[in-house]
Length: 152
Image (cartoon, rainbow, N blue to C red):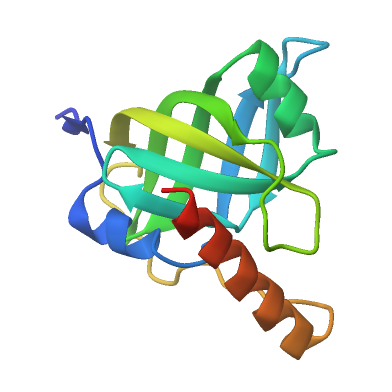
């Protein structure tokens, strides 16, 4: 039986995207037109129809989105794996209040699918540790989240 396709975030996914979260982003490479996948963590959903992503201005993702706005986010949450599809654009060239040169990308969601293979569930969600100064990482994460919220 096919999984239901949603046109916006379901409640558990919206809740996950209120804080830093591990996910992957798939874009179309602006030079090769091949798939390009990267792991990201600075995300925020201002509502159930949009997701904000903060990315280093020098990231290949920025150029990819300028040429090909279609993207897919892959999120492991709610005991499953979800693809969040839509078109993205550069909302803010440089986020204010953040010491890094970050671009704010806005994804307008067109569909959300549960893509977990049949008869299974995620028993342990991915976790990661920051490999630099913990206090500095926490401060930066808070600055980025605040800047994203201010652009909602």
